[in-house]
Length: 77
Image 1 (spheres, rainbow, N blue to C red):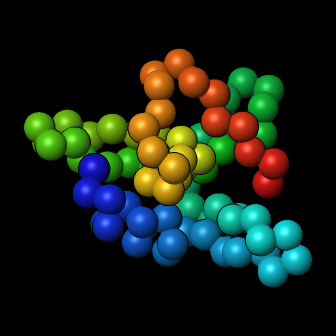
Image 2 (cartoon, helix red, strand yellow):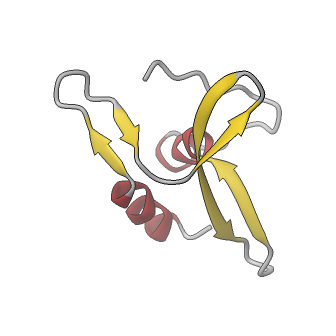
Image 3 (cartoon, rainbow, N blue to C red):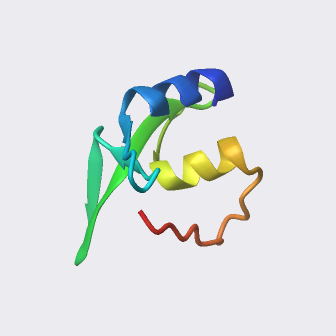
């Protein structure tokens, strides 16, 4: 994942709520059982394989750093 390309993609599909500063996702979503839909982004890995990932996990890696495989990313917005 090219970090600059992914940051631009995330910026294109979000709106920042001025009252809460939350990033509201307007792009593709995926439903997961009984939970509300979550933002989804697809990208190409270095080997050319396409990968889909949840936006909040991708944002964590881009803006915070490495994320252990089984770690949960909790978000309030």
